[in-house]
Image (tube, rainbow, N blue to C red; front, side, top):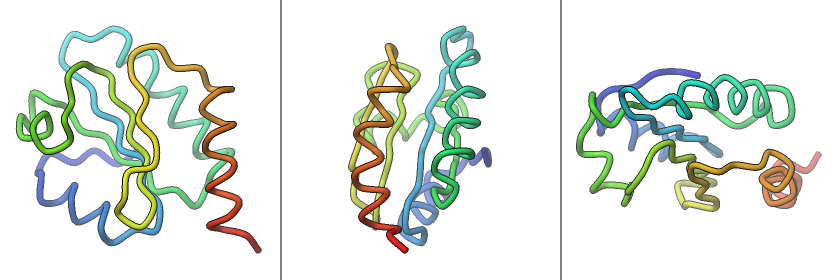
Length: 110
């Protein structure tokens, strides 16, 4: 997962990529620290065409307002710059996969 700290870099990454996973964490968030590597590995294996970026709300405080983040971690998935999925603190990888499989397979169908 590529770490970005500038809100304009984050917006550019979302706008320029076909599909982007944005993982937003907060300092001293144990759930954030445990969940990030799991989400990263899951997406790298199952959805290799999705660009993965991470940002910390402390490093980029504008994230809260820009993406309406109320708690961390926040997992946002964008296709063609539009938000498709938003998950929060209690994440089920199985349930997330059911939602993502549909759009991913349609979008990246061979």
